Every structure is written in structure tokens, then in C-alpha cells.
Image (cartoon, rainbow, N blue to C red; front, side):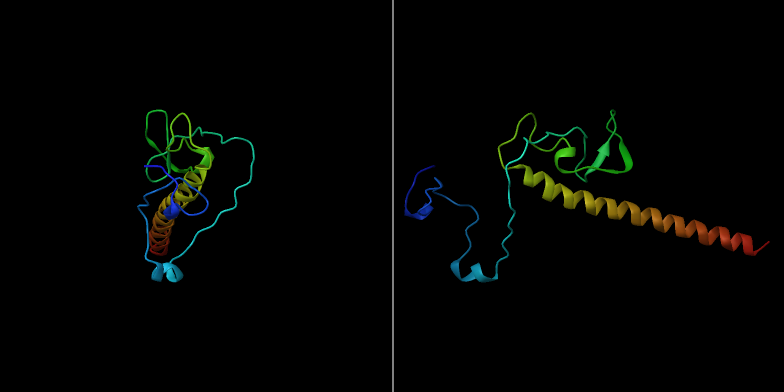
Length: 127
């Protein structure tokens, strides 16, 4: 539940139980991620529909090959509304997911292209 006590620190964050506690001895070796958040215009709430791999979907939910979305451009995981400050989840997580998917897609495309070029040059050399 929410309450202020010494365990939640002098900031009074209101949290009493933490699910991600690490032992104090491990703090020095654990990574910490920081992002600077600046007040700007409210979050866009997206427009592109994406799947779990960040691939954009057409109106009939078919993948549009080579088109990826993340962050404010995508519909996101929040539905009609989102809590303030939670847009970093969409941007960072789906940015990485979409980037990884795009790299796989374009690597596969390049391999197919190279293989087709090899095949056509082998056929041309037989002429």
C-alpha cells in the first residue's frame, strides 16, 4: 500500500513495497539509466498501428514490409490516455525493438539481393 515511512526515504515517494530491490553490495556494479525530461507539448498518442516487432500494419493488419514505428508515431501500449512521463517506455523500448526488427529485415533483403546478383553474374558468365 501507499504510506510514508523511513523505508520510502525522505522524499516521501509514497511507496512502501518495492519489487525491484537489489542488495546494497550490488549497487556499485548495477547499471543506472538516466533521461532528462523537459516539459513540452503533450504526447501525440500515435497514429501508426504496430505489432510486437515494431512493424507497421495496414488497415487489414498485414505487415507493411520495411516500415517500422516507435514512440509518438506509433499507437503505443497506453490506449486512449497515458500517465505523464510514461512516453519514454514507448520511445526507448519500441525504438530498440523496431531498430532490431529493421536491421533483421534489411539484412535479409541485402542477402537476397547479393545472392540474386551472384546468380545473375554466374548466368551471364556462361554466355
